[in-house]
Length: 247
Image (cartoon, rainbow, N blue to C red; front, side):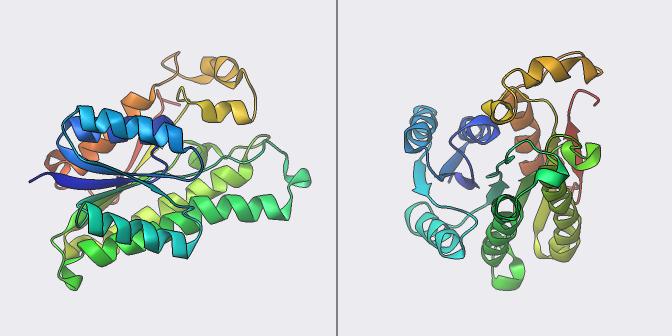
């Protein structure tokens, strides 16, 4: 039987790359999206071309009712999860601290932090041996911004990823004896459209700061995510894995 993975924010970028690679590695994939149904359906088509089942579910992961519906739909149409890739997120507007708006901070932390907690909670309720589950794995998409800080660009985004890292550490310890491994990846300058929300040529400007002298691809991050989900990482939990070219 195929294993089942849910990818939140699975319609674009790292999420889409992880969904496609998961299908290649034998997972049926629940692809969550918030607004871009067409992109999510395109990913689902690729999953099916790889010979696996795909389920597309719209949900705003900052909303508890949406998260409950997302997981219940996956339960009914695919089955009980083996893995969660907690990936849905936004960077918000590029801004200095003195210009930040309260509503923008609330929106960003709602998706990047509240959403990760809600999805992890539902995954644990299904995976934990404490709840008669069979175990599983969770990989959170963090960011190199968590240790760089985002000054002059996205301090609020960086802070939300710091929260992701702390949640990863804590949850990994909490459920280690319940059959669940919890890890995170910390992507650096990755070739996705998310950078254009702040500066059209951001990747070009920032690349000289990367020791390896190049940007990374979403597929390179996906490879690390799928390794963390795999049995090859069976003794790895509570780890933060930089995928940042040395930055």
